Amino acid sequence: MKIYGYPIHQGGVEFYAGVVAVNVLLERIRVDTFSSVSQDGYQRSLSAARARAFGRYILGKNYSPLSILVNVREADAISVGEGIIEVRDDVELWVVDGQHRVEGFRFAIQQDPEVGLMEVPVILMNQPSGYQEAWQFITINKTQKGVRTDLAERFLDQALKREGRAALQDMRDQGAL
Image (cartoon, rainbow, N blue to C red; front, side, top):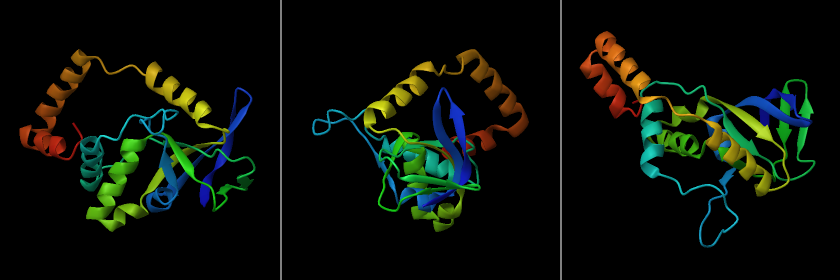
């Protein structure tokens, strides 16, 4: 798998930022979900409704600039060239952050195969286990602060005035609101 991107260095760790076609990414990913069978998993079960809502949003000709954070657990599985990060073909990518977006893309592709050609930003780590992935997952999800309700309501009021009720209802139906 080739990802167009570059290495990044933070805190003594090298990881990679790049871009790849959605259909290429979908071929290689797994999610380490917690279950009675997988006690070491750290991701919650997929909410199919949430994934479909994102897929409908993308099908509405919208875009998502957010990156998908993935990890390669195998050592020596990544090589870096000029503007290209290559991941060995026998290696899986574990989704650390973005499982609902990934599954939303999968849903959207079933409706419109052209979605698979969209480029998606990815951040690629190379940590040896799900334990390190879980640390990143917890850090990301525990340190984010949600939008204050009063700010969200103020924005929706502005959007209603600018876009109109019908447009907002369409956005809601597409999963944008």
